[in-house]
Image (cartoon, rainbow, N blue to C red; front, side, top):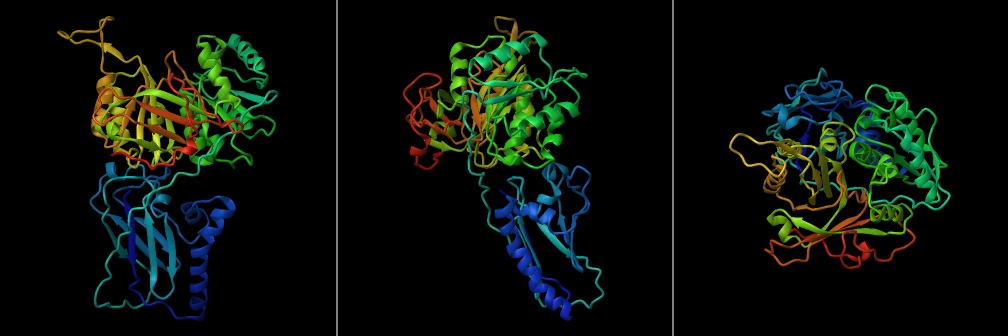
Length: 518
């Protein structure tokens, strides 16, 4: 992670009035200790405190979306002093996606006798180091001091971002209430009743709000109504789960209506869905630290076109009967993966296209210390390659423990004259895109997770503890790894049979060995 530190004593002598001498120590104490009390009492992070509580600091020169203009400095005004942090020699591509309030996040300390010290690290990860220049642009009419030597800028050591402690949702019991929502497209109206009957056969009560499906352009309803139904379901105190009816597109449009309001004052609620619901999964992790379940939509379950094994496994995860899921057969795609022995981190991701569209928004979670998972449908090889490169250039692979590729279904494209196609007369370059990714990044890449838009839609918890175990011999090209993911089950901590076959799983908590990438 790149660090940004600007330390500069004021070149103006400090006023010596009684007011200043009284305010200085008080301000120093407030800015030093108050953030820590707020983080404990309200769950705020330090940069939230600096941007929301400190009325004396004003950030200017950013547009309405909060992005930095690379040709203009960021100004910080504090009392009678003003400093400018200049990003010299950087282009739009290197500074894009920086939220202005996250530029200085580590600490803000007022030193009454020595001026002002800004210390911080960039919240968005990049490999480049940012040379900075600090200029005094104070408008105070005081004589300038002439120091013999200008103080040197100091650089903080890289600070590793730590993900919030992994949580699990509360497992459902017979008689619990499930709210059904449709944040994206509508499904066929005749599928609603079969979906209700399926959940009722599991012993659950189902609540489908009146007017849920009133098609509006592409979507199940207007943005306002879809957002209101989703907000009510997430905040309802009498329900234990939120199950999405269909996805396709539209979830991005309702996120501002959900996460511009306060977090529910309750433990994490189980949220189930996939595909376009990836945006909701990511926002839940980013803003509320809620884990969720990447699982089949209700319209797919209502059509009874999933295998009984998958439906039964989904039911056992929902009711907490499976404490963990175990996926065997992950194939290493690069040397880093073949040399790995144990990789630990929570899983983040979902649909690649939807996840990529979160870049630059306030719904993208931190990726450091996580295992990224991607799946997609109908995307050709060059489009997948473009998405992988975009994620890499945006810095989202920095600090990532591993990348796991799920199902990449479809992707056939016409053959060029002289090329040999497959049995359908098409060519498919999806494998080439995955191989390009494995060669581009310097982290382990695995493939073969049976999760996605294909026939095998196994449930996959997101935001919970996960471990990739690779006990194969170094250099074995036919080796496979195993992914074990903790679910929301809290009542049974017995081992769970592998989703993809294999030996019994063990408790994740028993794996105390540190991560090893070789």
